[in-house]
Length: 267
Image (cartoon, rainbow, N blue to C red; front, side, top):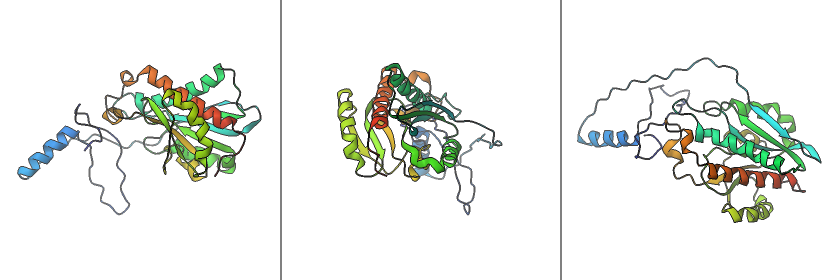
């Protein structure tokens, strides 16, 4: 059963992983409407289905993360990452998953640049590659920077669409909340002052979280996100420009504030 609602009869694509000792049976996602129909028919008696499945696994190919730095003025070797992922599934165009996250990250850095601000630490924009079916971009970056993980001060990832932001979620030590309080106070004016702790990090920055880097993501109005994500309806018309700009502003404020903070974050 696809993860979306039963309003549009859209199947959601993705991938299936098998345990080493599990039989590799065919797997597919059907729309919510069709899942309900199958369930109703099955309640009346045995059901036979014919599925035509076309996926194939192609050989690996080379792809690249795209990285740009806004150098810090005092501690350029210390890095605050702001990021989204470049790749998307093939049914739609990847507008909300995750073109929006890449746009938010680029614009967040651009806001800081246009205001002629040079933060204490470096702001690093990363557009990750291969989030959807392998996480090679995030994993490779973490491996390449294992020796200087301690220099990565914080990491943001936007990968939940571009709905109106309501706050920040963070993965880190409990003491982090007190340091985030002043940032949340600034964001309250735009309706984005909520703080929520989580045990999870964005998929691409999760390897950095395992190395102890505090991670952050904007919390958004996600009521419609799963209606479209991984479907043919993930197209640019689903993006509300004003809400996209709001997300960029929230990430810009939070990332700049963390890049400016004097004391180290608890790890």
